[in-house]
Length: 165
Image (cartoon, rainbow, N blue to C red; front, side, top):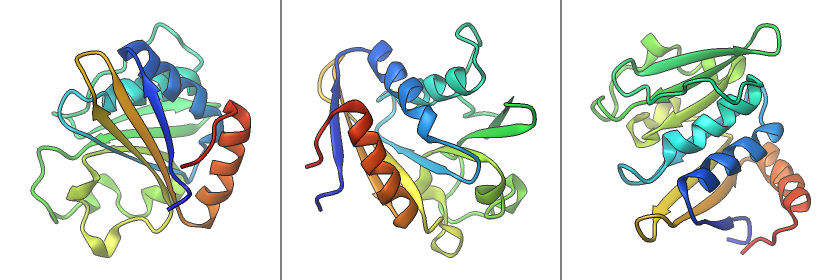
C-alpha cells in the first residue's frame, strides 16, 4: 500500500540490531505488534529494543511466553511491556494485562497480536512482520497503522536511507 518498509536481515544479530536501531523512534504510548512464525525472531527484535532503551548491552531479555508480560524500566520511570500472547486463546479477556489502557502509558511490544480482540485492538501501531526466508535470513516488514505511525515511518525511512515499497 505504499507505506510498508521491507528489510532483509541475514542473521539473528541483524534482527536484534534492527530492533536496537529502531528503538530511538519508539516512546511511551507506542504499540509495536510483532508477528511471524515460531522462531522467526520476534523476541530477538524485542531484545534489541529493550537493550537500547535500557542502555544495557548485556541485559538478559527472554521470551515472556510463560509470564505473558515482562516489564522493563528505562529513562527514570518509563516502562516497556514485552508481551507474548501465544498461550492465550483468541479473544480472551486481556484486562488482567492492563489492556487497553496500557497502550497509552507504556511502550508495548506485543508478540502474537492476533490474540487481541477487535474491541480493544489498538487503532495506532507499528506492525512488524518477520518472515523466515532461510535458516539465517529473515525478511522484516514494517507497516505503520494510524497517522502517528505514518509520520514516524517517514522519519525512519529518512534515517536509515531506505525506500518504501
